[in-house]
Amino acid sequence: MVFSSPFFVAFFFPTLLIIYLITGARLRNLVLFCFSIFFYTWGEPKALPIMLVVILVNYCVALIICQSSARAYFFMAGIVANFGILLVFKYLDFLVSNINILLSSIGISHIPQPNILLPIGISFYIFQAVSYLVDVYRGQVPVQNNLFRFALYISLFPQLVAGPIVRYASVVNDLGRRKFDATNFQEGLIRFCIGLAKKVFIADSLGYVADCIFDSPVNSLPSFWAWCGAITFALQIYYDFSAYSDMAIGIGRMFNFTFPENFNYPYAAKSIQEFWRRWHMSLTTWLKDYLYIPLGGSRRSFPVTCRNILIVLLCCGIWHGAAWNFVIWGLYNGFGLMGERILGRLGTNLQSNWLWQVLKSLRRPFTILFILVGWVIFRTETPDACLGYLKAMFMGNPNYDFYALPIVWENCLTYSNGIFLIIALVFSQPLNRVTFTHFYRSLALQLALFIVFIATYAFIMTTDYSSFLYFRF
Image (cartoon, rainbow, N blue to C red; front, side, top):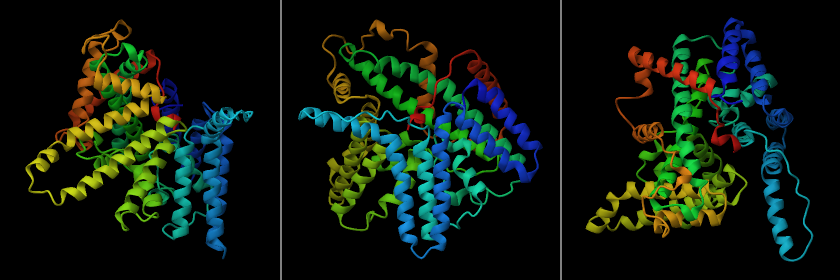
């Protein structure tokens, strides 16, 4: 089930709100848990036992950690169990297929392909469970003795399948009895409506254009439209994922849960490092706190710091999916961050050099260019397709003019899609006059948003809906 589906908007969420609001405070967690389980099993009931096993294992391990003298061994066992589950269900097929390629090259019979179902959202709730174990082991959060409350923390439906990754410390107080807060409910509803409009109108419109271009034969791709595809996909993945985060944060606030922000205008970044501080912030913060800093962070020698950066970004790429394009994308960003650090060290001695000042002024366009190339790697599924697409972008296509418009997508960039592309470009940058706070305070903006919501509601009731990009991660 997705937030932009007719069933969720017209039935699931209104029903949940009504039952939740008329139920006493003692039973509201039960209501949320039951609806969360229903939400998760709606499209994939076979994946539910896996999530329940993760809940039970981590609940028991955390209790043992606090009571056993061999707490370090049980802690490591819990970490291995979590990542073992993730390895089996997300990466085993990928590993076996690549082993079979190696075996076939030396004439050895292949290993049977397991063809294991990938549970939706497993990367997100496994990372939440791991962060809980680590924080309990470090003594940073109290252990949760109530199995039901811990199960609600892992399974809470707004952030269950596509984040943001919620730390236990940020919701431990919210897991108790919560009172209805009219202000939080209003702000959460506004945030949800904004996210729904972003998904339905902007992300899906841009996704249609990006799919038309990326699915076209690369030998019929003029340079202009290759760039257009890269830009529209970059905007699509941002609006698609940030829209889900907006809706998740909004729903959480309606129920008096505080979820972390996940995006902060990443395309306004002036460096690759700044981009990663603004993009998918709950994941990058998780990787920083639970991987980068334990590896030594930037406290050791410069080569060790570069090694740590590369390891973290490689893990970030692998986290996104069991495919070589994600591995390459992670390494690409890792080497980009390393190169940026090296240039930064060189620049300390060149501050008065005019050429260095010119290069500094080009940081932002270079960052955008770097990001766009990265999204092409992310979007294309094979190295050959990636190289062909990048060749069309930077070297053109001798079969077509720079701006030629092949018939295969002559209708994909319609007037309405063009308008949404312009809106997406404008609102991808921070605008001081339009923020969430302004919507919370302005009656006129709320009225405009209500009209947009009605239009969005009518649209999703009469058209097919698309899933969120990050559901497959």
